[in-house]
Length: 322
Image 1 (tube, rainbow, N blue to C red):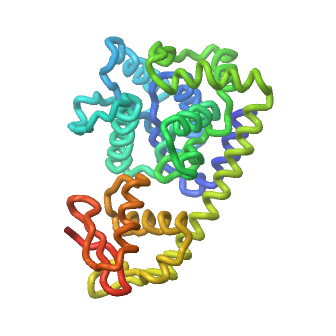
Image 2: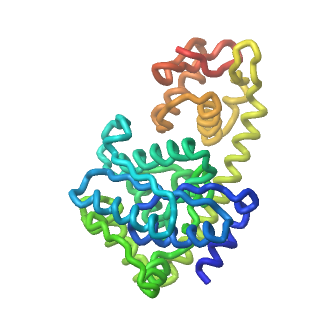
């Protein structure tokens, strides 16, 4: 019944028999997703490849990779295992090992995606992961877009389990005597996400048993409103900006831009920078700094990063190379 529900939600990808890369850690969530995708693989609806990253943070991590490899061999699924030290990826530590781990995994998954000429990367995030992400981002500070959490389909990533509860995953595995690994670090209070899982969410469920149902409903409202604002932002951008064949850049009407609501101004700036592939940290302080520059009567340039500036001249503005 659970597999049928998941299969119905994935119907839209079956028309081209996609090749799917699965992020396989050996934990219950990714093992459950492995069994579901392996079923589709056997039915010739998809082609499945499993990928495991050994972060090398725990002494027993090599055993986790071996578990995943054996699982794939038993089911005739291609397996790719890598160590973090083999990726040759230099990441700056920002205080969060979770963030470093996520970036390492995504780098590997995208690399394999290209090498294998695959279509999707399947990740095993479920409903409780959404809840943890929501409160994690509130505590760390976020925007409306941040509160919409993870998306079911966010190319090249797909998350088939986002509408599935953890207890249903465990019930399936345990009732079918399927082995999986338990990462003891998931119980450590060292990590904020773990503390949210252990202390915050259980209390909310205790306050109201309908918490999971109502959370899903609220999240859907937030996602719908964010989708609307994204469409409005694109429409506004197309009204204000024209592509300059001379400069090979988008150039905007400053007067029309200044008349926008502050929220829309910031969204249009972020849209512009993404459109021009400008690497930046979309912090409020940076956006406010740029807006002060644009609203100032004087023309000139303002640096965004070491490679890009934003310029304004008369009633025009846009990005240029530094």
